[in-house]
Image (cartoon, rainbow, N blue to C red; front, side, top):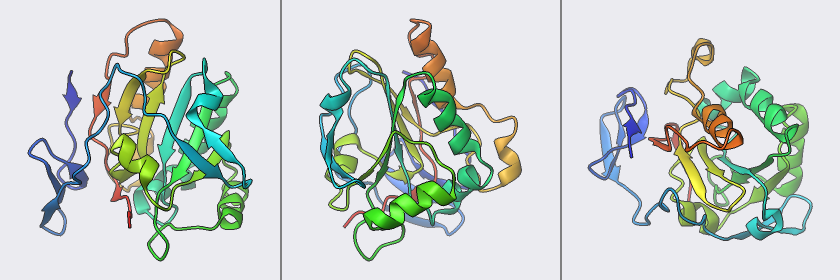
Length: 214
């Protein structure tokens, strides 16, 4: 399984098990939990949607599902929302019947934490189009998937198998101009799945802000 390289200017999870913040020169231990394997069943979960109702991965059995970990205050996330890049991908995929679940794992009192009402306001003001926004303040879902950064993206095929995990694209910067011309790994993986092909790039290193777990 190949892993695409990332810039040293960003937050990254390295092959040595360290989370490096190259700009600040800091090194901190990587999370203790392990990410699920590509090609096996995606971890089952249930989380509270902003509607107040519980939502489970099992609710979408037989559907292609995208999971997007987000933190609206993270500059890497803002890059993709303020340029409309994330919303465009959401609209494109959900129009094709794909389920898009945006997850927020920031714990109370940390960057990116929101109430259900605040999350819905963000969806409206940013003109986002996820199928649902799920709240994970305890971090149970995020840790089950090994989500380390925002944005951190996952793709589950209609057989319930995890077929992609990692970055949204190959431009790990906060520069808005870098959205143009970037290779979007999520779109490419979706195209492979739709065509019945094996995903050509099943795993990359996620970049962005660290998920603010409790």
